[in-house]
Length: 487
Image (tube, rainbow, N blue to C red; front, side, top):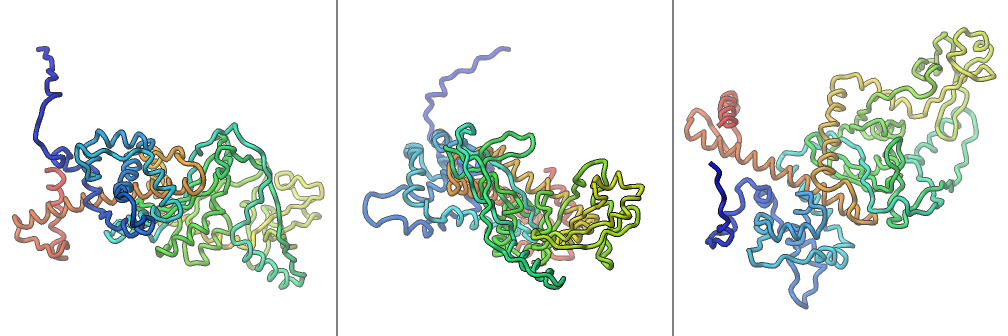
């Protein structure tokens, strides 16, 4: 039978508390239960004066911005509109039905006047991470590292060309020192290193000059920022560094690992092919960290032998070609490449010469970096089951973190301009993601333990002391856990 809903309920008056309107399993309840925001007051106290009219509670300001990033609301203006009509958001802020919500410009003004020169939001990020570590949710012994490009808030057609200095390669000073040591051992004069002022032409945005012009393969060319990020095996973000989009990943890995080392005991670092360089392998293995790197396809022409077709003999310090001839060491370049050269007389009569080299002098050259042995260690360990399992975990950790950040937390585009403000967006996004995971996992653990505490009263054969089951009773937990899942 067709029925028609009456709309008189729009004007209904009812006496009800706001607490009853918020579902018991709403995310804001879980966040409020897991994190005490009182730690914010000492961080910002020095930015407020002792005279004048009362300010808006700084905890409220932080909660408002966390609502924006927790629920992926596109702007502060839209966030305020959502809070005005959403009872769960009002409950989270501690506002009643009649309390006016702050204007959307309030956070921006407070950031510009109070928080811009402070590290308040970094403290919030690290406080949430610390709480997750104390809860036992974070396993920082393995760091999964990658970067993602976030489109800058800038018109890609408005730019000017500018000469900028090329970035210095990581670990360059140590490499130059080792090069001269090898040259002196070979009886040659050491190189005299002069400060290079190499420059390159690049596009600089007129809208956001601190962004970088991102060019990679067939992807859209645009101004962007790179979020270089590390997470653990459970998907908790450990740290991040934001750079212009034209900075290569390998240039930022060492500074990122140096930040991580101050807080965590890293034993393995899992990376993609963009980080597969001899310098990075040298740095990680020298600092007692395993470099987990993937397979990379041979480079060069398809119809010629690649470097992998030659075998390096450590005893002879020479390469052996497919025709069993030696390529001997000749010299060391300024870039740290050891040069190996074949015998042109033997190459001239070799039956494999057409598939080996196109040199008019019938010579084959191979280059081996001074630190390539460190890279070969990772290449050998790549075949072990442990390394294979760690690399497979990448798509479930750092790749998933980036996907969630862009799809659920508004990180597909930058909402600010300038490196400092974009770093603020990155820290707030990852803080919200860690907070969400911490709240959900804590709630599940609380529900799990609450169920078993109730089960113990009904099952006297189970012994539960201070949140831990005795060793002799753990075998009996599985049937109870199944009941918990299906009831």
